[in-house]
Length: 597
Ligand SMILES: O=C(O)c1ccc(O)c(O)c1
Ligand SMILES: [Mg+2]
Image: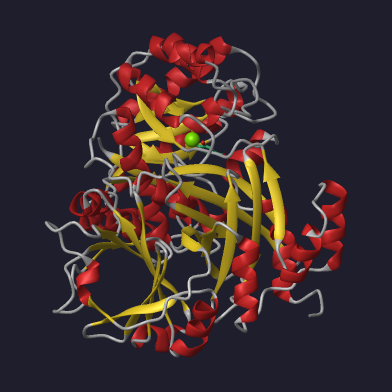
C-alpha cells in the first residue's frame, strides 16, 4: 500500500523532512501547516521539490475549529478555508484534514455541524478538494470516530469524508465493541488513515498525543488490529504516520524516517498486505567481537576469567578467546585504534544466514559487505541502529561459510573457570534510539521483546528492555540513559553464564582480576530480605556478588571493572528469567564511584 508520513513526525526544516521521508522510501507526505508557514519555499517550489523526490502530497493539515459555530463565525471560517483551498491548488494536493473543534464558541449540535461541514465541502469541491473530518480525542463536542462519522454521514456530501487516526481511536479504549462501528463506514468515505502507537500511560489525552506518540509496534496499542478493520471496509488510501513525539522532534530526521518506514513495513506484513521474507530467528550467540587499541587490558581480564586465547585470525590482528561455548574476538585493527575499547559486533547463529540478511534488508537494515577482506569467509551481516554489526553465522555447517575458517588454532593452556557461554549482551542505545532498537530487534531478528523497566542511576533514569529468542540462548538487553551518557558507566557489557559464580569470581580475583565492589548497605538489605545459609552472605560480600530471586529461581551475579567502554558480568541463573534489574541501581552507583572506592 501507499505509505506516507506527516512532516510533524520529523525534525528539521521542511526540506530536510521531505528529503528524509523520500530517502527512507515513503511514497508521500502530509504537509503540516506550520512546516509550510515556516518554509522559505513557495508552495510551487514545495510541490516541485516533492515531485523531484518522488513524493506525493497526500494531505494538507490541519484546519481547525471549523464546525458548529455561530453563522458569523462560520462565514469567517469559510473565508479562511477559501485561502487554504487556493493554497492547496498551488501545492497540488487534494485532501485537507479538518479536526473536530475545540473552540469555545462551538456548540453541541450535530445537525449544525453537518450542515456547516456540508457547506465547507461545497466550497472545497469548487477547488477540487476533499475534506477529511477527524475526531480529536479531546474535541469539544466530537471526540470519537463514530460520532465524526455520523456527522459526515448526515452531511452526505461527496467531497466530505472522515479521517481515522489510530491514536484518537485507541487512546479512548480498544475494547472490540468500541471498534466495531468501523465496519459501518463505507471504505470510500474514509478519506484518510493516520497511524500512531503510544505507550500505555494514564495521563491527559492531549498531552499524551502531543508528546508521546510513537511508531506502530513501539507502543502498547494494537494498531495492526485497527488497520485490519479499516482495510476490511475497502479503504485503499495511504497508511500515513502522524507521530507527535518530543524525542523525534530533536533526533536526526534521516534515521527517524527509516525507523518510521520500517514500522510501516512490519505493520503491513502483520496485516497481510505486503509480505516480507520470513524472519529467521537466531538460535545462539556464535561470538562477540571487541575492538581495542591495546589487547593487553582486555586479555588480562579474560585470562583471569578463565578464558584462553585459542586461535588467531589468519590475516588480521584478531584473536579468538574461548571458554566453554563463550567466544570473544579481540580485534586490535583500525576500528579499535579509532574508537577505543568497545563491543563492535555480535555473531548470531542462524539457521539460514542468507535468509536472515534478506529479511534484514527488506526492513531497511544496512547490509554490510559479505567479506570485510578478500581472504575472509563471506558472512552475511547487517548493522543494527546503534552501529553494532550483526553477523549471521552457520558455525560448523560444512555447506555454508564458517567464520571459524578464518582462524588458525594456537597452542594454549586450558584454565577454565566455569564459564559456559554468553548469557546476554547489554547494549546501551543512543538516547533517541531506544524504541527503534526494540522494534529493530523484534522485526528484523524475530526476537521477542520483554517489558521495559526503569532503573535509577544516580545521575539519571535508565530504561532497559530485553529481547530474546524462545529458548533464551540469545538475550540482548537494550538500555538507554539520560543524555549525554557517561561512556565508562553506560558502557556495553557482556554477561557470561557460569554454573558457580562464587567459584568463577574467586578464580577471577585470585588471578588478579578486580571485581566491582558493592557497598555494605546492600548486603545488610539482602540479609533483611532473604535468609541465607551460614557464611553465604559473607562470601557474596567478599566477592561483590549480587543476589535476586524471581518466581522461577535464584540469580547471583557480579561485575568486572570497566575496560574502555565495555565490562563483563558473571551470572549464575538457576531458573531465574530476569536480568537483576532490582540490583542495577546499586551496580550503576558503584560504577559511578559514588561509594568512594
Ligand atoms: O494535536 C493536534 O492538534 C492534532 C492535529 C491534527 C491531527 O491529525 C491530530 O491527530 C492531532
Ligand atoms: Mg491525526
